[in-house]
Length: 121
Length: 107
Image (cartoon, rainbow over all chains, first blue to last red; front, side, top):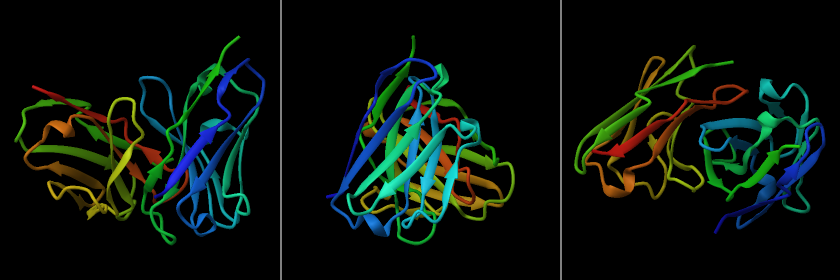
């Protein structure tokens, strides 16, 4: 059974940093691209970032303006999201998600439970 | 960025109704279109990928289709557990983008 467990969320002041982690199990982590998706309370889904199996291809939402960095450690089956210069509008649940197939971009078939990041003074 | 426009934003329907949700892309995305269901307090669930392929384990009352840059999710015979919010998402190019969601409520 695929499991994705996020951690690292919490209350943080504006302009501070936070690092989210997502530990994966139940599948061959290094075979799959991984993504972060966020959802502000009561709002819709927003894709944040994605990383290929070997970290060779990385993408970000334009709205992040270079403040976030995605990475992965295949030896530890772990996905990361480094979030710098946090703003109130970054307040959201952050989900880690796995791509459906090893090849091609066919959606996200497994999701974590989400970790809440609240940016407030 | 590619804009995904869903309609309607909400709808009311009864059990056993047929429901159709539309998603239009602002430019070509081939068939790189996925549909998700999200129940309150839960993570999204992948229903349809590549416009019309049913994800494993998803009931066959869910189906997807494509006509150019317009995509449709159809639920035949709506069931009580189908009352949720549905999102389309393009995976043609980064940044991936989602539609704004369609909330399906009980009439």
